[in-house]
Image (cartoon, rainbow, N blue to C red):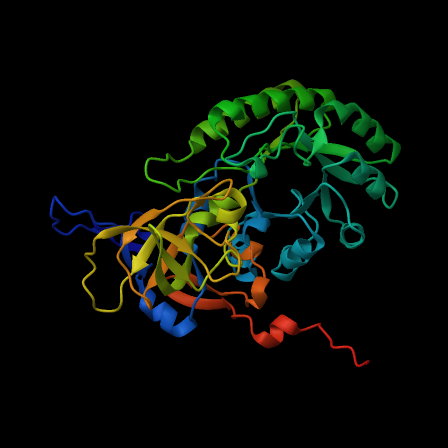
Amino acid sequence: MIYVWDSCRSSQTPNFQKPSMNDEQQFSMVRTHICGLRVADLVSKYGTPLYVYDEATILEQIEALRSFDWIRYAQKACSNLAVLDRIRRRGVLVDAVSAGEIRRALEVGYVPEGDPPPIVYTADLFDQEALDLVVERNIHVNCGSPEMIDQLGSRVQGREITLRINPGFGHGHSQKTNTGGPQSKHGIWHEDLADCLERSRSHGLKISGLHMHIGSGTDLGHLSQVVGAMESMAREVGPQITSLSAGGGLSIPYQEGESRVDISGYFELWDGLRRSLAKEWGHPIRLEIEPGRYLLAESGFLIAEIRAVKRMGENTFYLLDAGFNNLARPILYGAYHPMSVVPASGEDTARPLRDVVVGGPLCESGDIFTQEEGGFVRTRSLPDARVGEHVVIECAGAYGFVMGSNYNSKPMAAEVLIVGGTPHLVRSRQTFEDLIRGESILDID
């Protein structure tokens, strides 16, 4: 079956056109447009590799989470200033994991203080710049280690803090995205909570909330464990708690047959705990959720040009001008991303499938987009394609550009945000001059 796909969430569902097909021949997805815009026109104007984000998808995902009191965007998923600003305009708060991310939030108009805090710094440590910044700008801190309590308390007193707790177990589609349990560096070990309460009291800091996040792709079964662990930790801290954060890790479907997360069920589990504690303690408790990938992943597309089609034994390779310097998730986690082929302008889109390996230009054998965790290379059934045509790597809006690098002295890609059907360049393609800025040649023999 062939799908000619014009993906734009503002129309709720993709526009699928299903041509007649021979039962003896199999066909696959071909893409011609993104949000009503011809991919060929985007490429002609902005070049490749190119990241394209659809604002309508981001806003739709935000609205799906409105049952929570507050949505706090984990900007590490995609920290482009234009994206941050559009999210801010929808009343979404922001999480920052570095001094640079705090500065990005301030740059787009988030204010440092408020109730709830517009910006929260969540980390497992303070580097000196981050500690100075949270002290000077009165940024709320979500502490991920006992040492952070001591380091903050040595500089300021009388502030409220929250604690990120590691409940002793985790979950994730990859061990590298598992953020709970004894093999994870994240959070305060649950058995150390009493010690952290004493540390905070000794420094004049008040623990006003708890945060718990065990990894990506959490299902309702694992979530019930998290909620139970949070209840135990909250009761240990007591009625000084005024907020609970459900963390993030909300999944999105990357492959056919994968289901969407049950947001109502997700909320009901957390809301039940919140209501129980609020009734017992006699005051309201704010319930936050902290999505990153959930808001951005499906909004993003990485467009790349096919620069070589070559056979290596039994394998056929489509080699693109984008590599793991542009999208690292496959090499890091064995992450699966749906892909589509963009035919040359005006050509028949009905093409037979071929099993191909899709890779990039880097001088690394691991520069393969169709691999599983552990580096096992797999083929993908994609339409027959030629050099000069394009591949769109989809669901690439989260942990895409932000994890990019200049490996092999490759410039960073351009980024485009589509708002109301109009494309806007929100990051120019990096130039060679940008690439070497800050370097110097020694004027010595």
